Length: 277
Image (cartoon, rainbow, N blue to C red; front, side, top):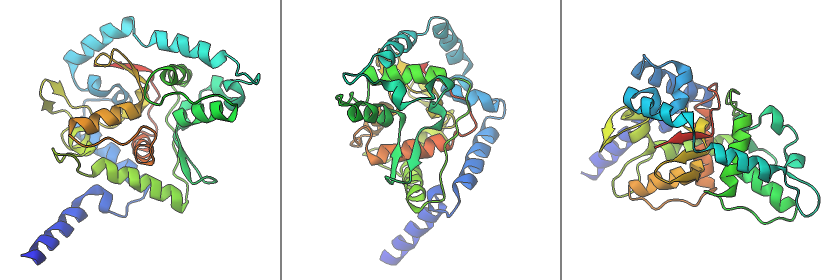
């Protein structure tokens, strides 16, 4: 009986996407192909709009919100905060000299010198601490406002996340990929269950959004939150919904997940900040 169970486990593991030896580029092609076949009526460029790309009724309501979007205040506040100097006389512009041209489309990236994934929020707080300032809270508040301002400057730029030919980068990418497909929590569900395999299906009163394009709209204003939040805030909420203990925002685990999920959206345009339910 034990041999049968072991053999079955091996078969199930081999059947999952993360078990294969596919390259990131292979994964990207397969990921994109899966969603274009599943939702053939959706233009590739529209996947950045999440559930509103696949649900006409929800899209109508969302378009009404977009006439006077709640995130506009965050953009204005973020612009003000970004322009203020630190106590040492320097500012965010010294850390992000190309910010006016748009930089969000290049995050997260793998820094081969440190062997770590660098997210935009991580870079914002490093800028602060390198200049003698206290770091901002990771999930909401000021960091989402600065992120919203930077995202707005990158609108229309195509996501361009790279996985260099580096053992650490490949390991980080595969860690994120495994997290996306791995079951967890009391409900024994994976990110992929909701946003890959069953995307477009109903869960309670909501339609599950496709994972393709997810990271493009962050930070987001969620009606449920009545405020802004980072993608790691959303990851934590998803983990709680499947009754799994969330990881900390900007943990290596969530950074790897963001790295994988953003790479899977390469070539799509940044449309953040955005508004969601």
